[in-house]
Image (tube, rainbow, N blue to C red; front, top):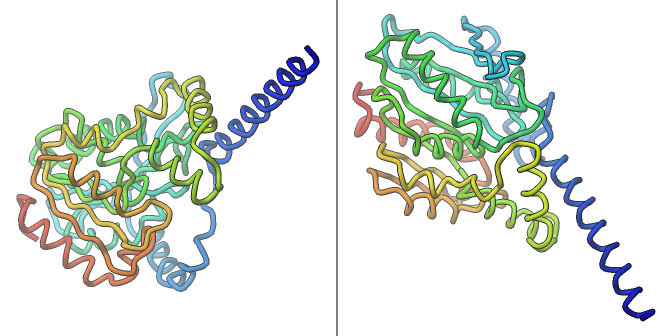
Length: 313
């Protein structure tokens, strides 16, 4: 009896510790951020160029867009940069990465601006100037982007030609958005280093970054997320959404990505039956493909757009 009592106490204690640690994992991973963390040491070499792009973004003429959420007490925020080409109908929505915001995508914004695009840079839930106590990793954001699409079409007109573009979490956001019922003005998608699902991504990070097993932590974090945000993490899947995608899509991924491994883009690529292309960038780490060779990156994107975007670039 004593042994059974001791075993029960130990089991209860382990369960309590597992839950508390899972709550800690949820908070550090899902809690909103009000500042952009410093980039990794390996990417500090791009810092000077990055801040030049940010300075360009801060100086350029732009419009602040918002819309109210359902409870009408909080709002979502984005910045719209009108094209330098008068009456241009080309628009790109640029989805930012984890713990970033629209401003952190200034390099991509300038690239598309120079191609003649109007540019929309949303702040996702839990980021920047947008509402949200927690980060939804693109799942709820995809529904917010449906609202941004409506605002674009109203602003630019029914002849708008819209490109969806995202990096990292933003890539998964536009991948998941591609599985929704989209307006005909949306022409194609470019996804740079997106994950295949939160299940796979969290399992990978638990193993390789925290040296922890998937169980019991992932199911507990998923349960906490369901309680806080209303859905289980198993719902968050680029692969499942891409099975419904009908738009041409270009997948980009760094060969040496140790945060979102490149095999996830292969899974995403295989999931869609739409017109598709894949570029695995030699020697690039996570979200480094643009920075490693901006001219080649722009060239590849222009080649894709020349094939699948109505207005030739």
